[in-house]
Image (cartoon, rainbow, N blue to C red):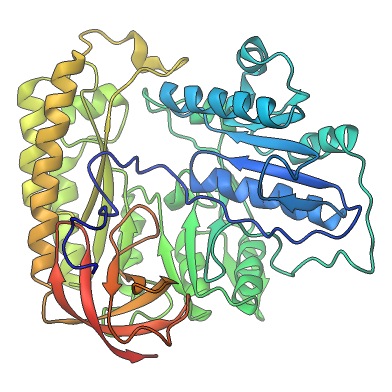
Length: 475
């Protein structure tokens, strides 16, 4: 029934925004008389982690988490302010929560500009900025006083998680030291602030003990982890570890979980990560997967973006990485139609993509963001030209993806099961992160599988983004 793309939308179609986190999943359990808080979590996985932290604190204080507006005594809306379209989405969500519930507390990136929110929605109870957890809790206490029962309100050691039980996001830092002209994240979230390495590794241990099988390491700039702390050292498991991405990777590898590194900038020391990674046959504790936001390939475009401009050198490094680990999957995102982008610059990007042959690719059409320096650049690209370049870019990316996946037919691959229903099992290979990459479908012999199972599958069909296969074994 699942064979072919007519019955199921591919996981990574051209219109997919690569910055979106999975939809939160809520536990609806609630004791009589227990106050309940609803949560609308918008934006990226980093915002989802913030939502988890807020709800963990609230659960510890005796609040239940409501999966809907009607069952909530108040609603928190964790907003996104990355793009103007995301701001509009956030305002719409706030309005919907106000209409359905009436008691709304706003937090997140858009909360860095409270007048923007209160100007549109003056009835919100409070507005706080990103990672201002204490202020959010104060606002909840004022709207809905806590009523804890220490004999009943037990909190899992891993805290509240809004993802499926078998994977979790592990946020290692806040903020960013870059000054990209198209981005306002440093204005909203501040400069880089890294968590000490032992705190991150202990959280990863707790997640493993709670049954998590896959960790997705996230931040604004994972490669810069620890720079702000001068890579200070801390003890974990009887040894000293630096607050540095390579030491972090080594530590996480010891846990034996599937671990993915997201938002890696290609600094020179990233070369040291490749030998630490596993393979298709033996993924080990660090998957051969890098999520690198290249953004563009033409040096002039990159300079206007205020990004590193060494696309040719990057191609050399990609070739070197693949020589060390031929199983390496590289995902990236790009911006087309950035102010001043000429047809020749765009063609350079297409040529670079053809040569790099990245495995997973997402794309944004440039849009102005209030407060971004790129707004003031000359020679903005007309919308119809952006649309045309976006379509051409995705056509190339889709063809490369289809060719790479077709080459997997007949091979055996490890996969993790995400969900099982009466039609089959939805899985992901080590090359696929949740929500943003492709899926692998098993539609025969799947009945005994459960989410979180690691399986071996023989691939027998491929499309532009997804795979189908036959179950060989459950590990």
